[in-house]
Length: 331
Image 1 (cartoon, rainbow, N blue to C red):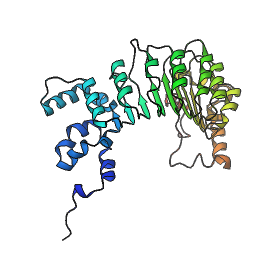
Image 2 (tube, rainbow, N blue to C red):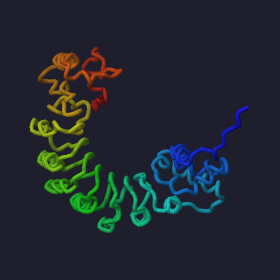
Image 3 (cartoon, one colour):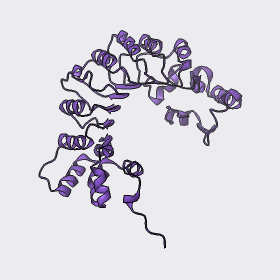
Image 4 (cartoon, rainbow, N blue to C red):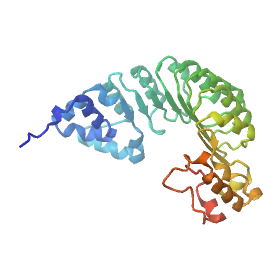
């Protein structure tokens, strides 16, 4: 009879690959109590390279905190203390930290900036209170992707600091108002490796600002503009976007207003406009949209786009069904 394999015999890199698929809740409340080899894995800094706190808040932070205190017989528990515990376990090797927007403070971020120099991916919590982003300068030389939610710092100042001190960024996402002066967007050209850019809820963004983005970010592969309510895309923008692999523009129109502007929602894949059928419906008519859709289906230039197991939508939908359908069609 073949001898039973033991966890201890598994190569450490394979072992860590398996365990690193677990959530922080599972790593801290379950793994230590399975067996000795699993507990010993917790002591390795490689086990804590990814610290994703987001699911703890989505599920219920209070419930997790209560279970943690019961499991380890603690009288008190805080997010800051939990963060510091895991960061110390990582011994400076953490490469990815994802805060929930409700979890984390400016003081927590300062602690991370000093204790996690190897970060490559960082999702910030909401920082509505006063904070000095200049204190983060030079802290993360290897940072590749940065997500910024609500912050007290004006967009202009934040973007200038980012473009000056995080030269290796390949991905940037920002949620919030840009302000009236769109000229600051030209500083994005100081990020030579920027391939992914997402601006969401970008009140204040103008068509001139979008031109600055397209002119300055020569290596962009993905561009997402969400809820840009102050302007509509024109043919010039479409032309400049032709070299971008994925370009998504959403002007924030509600479904009932979907067909009241010429390009309410655009999605480019590999430089080609897929949603040609979303042109002004009142001008072309629903029948024209379906005709164009069928023509695209028959066009060999679009063959690879339609090589999927599902349809975009059923041809039998009437106008009301289309309006009710989520207009952010995903191909």
